[in-house]
Amino acid sequence: MEPQRSLPPNNWADVAPRLIAVAAGRAPADLVIRNGIWVNVQSRELLPQSDIAIAEGRFAYCGPDAGPCIGPETEVIDAEGAYMIPGLIDGHMHIESGMLTPAEFARAIIPHGTTTIFTDPHEIANVLGLAGVRLMHDEALMQPINIWTQMPSCAPSAPGLETTGFEITAEDVAEAMQWPGIIGLGEMMNFPGVIAADPQMLAEMAATMRAGKVVGGHYASPDKGHAFAAYAAGGPADDHEGTAESDAIARVRLGMRSMMRLGSAWYDVESQITAVTEKGLDPRNFILCTDDSHSGTIVNEGHMNRVVRHAIACGCEPLVALQMATINTATHFGLERELGSIAPGRRADLILTSDLTTLPIERVIARGVTVARDGKGLVDCPHLDWPEESRRTVHLRRPITAEDYVIKAPAGANAVVAKVIGVVENQAPTKALTAELSVSDGAVQGDPDKDVCQIALVERHRATGGVVNGFVSGFGYKGRMAMASTVAHDSHHMIVVGTSREDMALAANRLAEVGGGITVFKDGAEIALVELPIAGLMSDSPASEVAAKAERMVAAMAEVGCTLNNAYMQHSLLALVVIPELRISDLGLVDVTRFEITELIEKTL
Image (tube, rainbow, N blue to C red):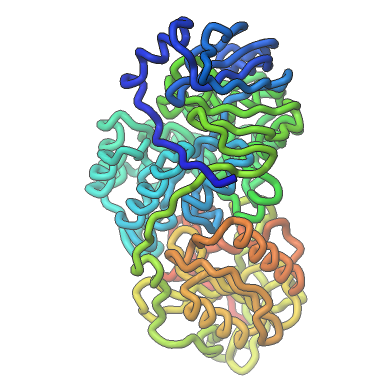
């Protein structure tokens, strides 16, 4: 069967007369689903023996008998007692983290029942600026599901602590607010700027609010006192950086929606959902999201269906979990009349499933069209013609050598105490550690026996030739190895981690050769490669192909000693200078608890 082409969503005002006629039984529907259990997330009810009538890509009638809506040309589906649930919605995510373009990302998530995503393309904004955001926005609007774009707010994420390929200005934000697919402002990561009433941050949020749109939040500080109150007063309406029950409670008490994420490496639902399941807070103020899911997770484990299943496994009632992945999200973004529920007038996004707990996705309907059945996509996902400049983004002044990774010791030192970035499994924050490291031939050495290896950030946007070196712990790497990636949130320079400077040089030069991606070297030979030629972040190859290469990459990381769950995601966040405690940037080692550059060597021995 050839994939069919889905049409753009019909404007309600243009089709309202027909919707009314179909609902009243005066005109035939395009599609009627009979004999299902209507999962009503508006009232949190299960309504058996229900029918749903669809016309013009929208729900027209929902109730006990759609017989009057059936005409000779009406397609009729017998649900055979299956649950009819709204299409799932991801409230906060980054398409680029899937290593896929919007088209290929859509193709990957449709069989899992996700019919709407709210995406913040701040990854490509750091590499290609406003032009890159427009490319993501335009391809998103071509897809058979709803992809709403949040205009990135912080590129760089922390001015003065990193250098990006491009910078986003308040004027850029004001311009983007006029684009048809822009739903609001992306996560406001510069929370110190908001707290300090930085004029640019306030101007960006003001432009968003003048457009009647939502400001996304990102508060990655443990301080829930006056600083957090100041941030909430500044305008962000949601936050996904919570990791504990107290974080979720603090956010909803101050009028923010608490977004609880389950991504490839972020497991923050279980620790926060007790605010609902045990403390009894109003669940309509909680939203489920993925934030960052790479292609391997999506292909092999699922997308929002995975998150909902996990929330249920953590003790959440199935209907409450479904609300958190449908109507709650739509309401938050001001789209309750468009999305998020099976109700007259809304876009006809619906899933048929035989079980509300295990949530098998048996049929997916988007805009009234069956787009997937039993795990297989049935609809075309059109591609943009990505321009050549989007594929030439790894700029090195010269080939990298092992000497670029030498960390010179202070004169006369036999050993030093150095600051070390400590990776925390399944969470975004890192720890600020220290380690006593030896000095040999005037250079500070890593110590794999102490699980301390080298990390370097190689500048790749402006060909400055800059290389910043440091140390990282937590990966467990052994032997002679290196791993390099041009996915390096959020500045997206090149992060290289390794135990061998020679292998680190080989890895960096390999990524320059292929135009970006991820590579793993062992004993001087490449053992895994994921090519990401678009902005060094994405591939326009099918998700299954990218996932297979990503799986090989994960296996290669294990082959060189890594035991962390989804360690690649931890690797890619080592330069994220807005999440505590210690990070690396092109300007140096960053103490994110103080938001300042700090020295690598703490003490000479």
